[in-house]
Length: 464
Image 1 (cartoon, rainbow, N blue to C red):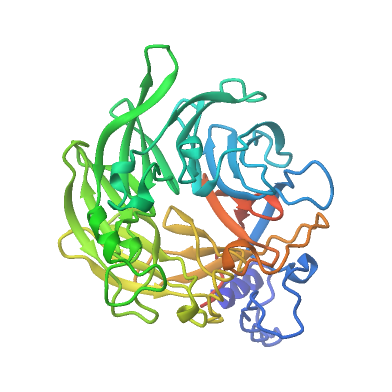
Image 2: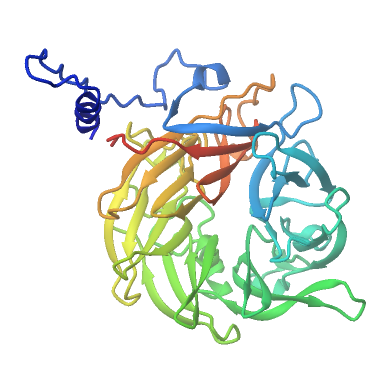
C-alpha cells in the first residue's frame, strides 16, 4: 500500500518521466512493539511510554486538583457532549462530569462523591436524556450496594436521587450470606421502545426499569432477570483459580451489550468462565437463551470472558467481538485474547479469529490484560491496561490487524504504588481502563492520568 502511494506521488510530480533515475524501493513498514519486555524498562515512568502509531491526541484532562494525584478514572460513558467517569481513588469514590464540546479543551464541570460506595468495573452509564447517571456499587452491605441514581440535570452539582438494592435472595443459602445484599460490578443502560432500562450485572443480569416513583424521583424497579446458573452452584465453588468444578464465577455475568435486531431485543452477555450467552429479552420477564459459546479449546482456557460487542456487516452477517480479562497466576504468561465470532445464527456460533498483542506479552496478573472496547465502522478501539489503547481493523473479521495505538503518557507526577491493592499488578503508567467511541473519536479513561480524546489518523499500516 505504501509503495503504491509513493509511485502515485512520483507520477504526479513528474518524477517518472523518460530518462528519470530509478525509483528507490520504499523502506518496509517496521512495527514498533509499544509493550516493552526490557528488564531496564521502568513501567511507572510515563516518559518511557511516549509511543504512538497512527493516532492523534485531540484533548486531555488529568481530572485532579493538584499535581501528584491520581484521578482513579476507571469507567466512562458519553451522552451528547457530556462525559461521565467513575472514580475510585483514596476513598474518594463517585463520578466526575466533563464537558467535551470543545474537543481540544475538555472542562471538568462537576462531581458526586459517596463515601460508602465501593465501585465496581464499568460502573457508570447515562440515561438516554443525559439527565441522570446510573452508578453501580460493588459493595456487599446494604448501605453501599446496588445501583445509585444520580440526578445530573445540573451538571455542576449532581445529587443523589435514589438507590436500588439487589435482593440478597440471589446469594447462596448459608449463614455467611445472612444480611448481605449482592453488589453490582458493571452496568449497561439503554432506552428500548421508549423505556429506560438499566442492566445490572453480578449475580446474573438484573433487568431494571427506570421510572418516576410516587415522590416524583427517578427510581429503578425489577423488569426481569437472566442467569445461566442458580445460586446453589456457589456452594460447589472453588474460590481460587477455576478447575473442573463449578466456580463462583459461574453465576457472574460480567458485562453485556443490548441491540435491537429485526424487532427483537437481543442481549449479549460476557458470562465469565461460562463464555458468551446470547439471550432474547424482547419480553424482559421471560428471557430466552438463543446461543452459547465458550473458548474451551484456546490457549489459557478456561478464560474469564469479560466484555462483548457485536455489529452487522454489509453482507448481512452479525459479528460478535468477545474479549477475556486475564488475571490469574496460572495465566500470568498467557497473552490476553480477543475473539471474533460469526453469530448470525446464534445456535451455530463460529470462531473466526483470535487476536493477542503482537509482542505476545503475558497478562502478568492483569497488568497487560485486555479490558473494554468499542466498535464503529468495523474498527475496534480497546483498552489494554498497561498496554495502553489499541485500534484494530475488523473489516475482515477472520483476519484482525492493527491500525494504531496510543500509550497514554501525560505526566502529573503521580507514581503508582506496588503492589496494587487486591493482589493485582497495576504499578505502571499507562493503566487504561475503559473507553467510549463516537464519530471516530475515542474517549478514554486512564486510571492514573485521566481523560483522553483520541482519533485515528492513518490506517495504512500493515502491523500484525
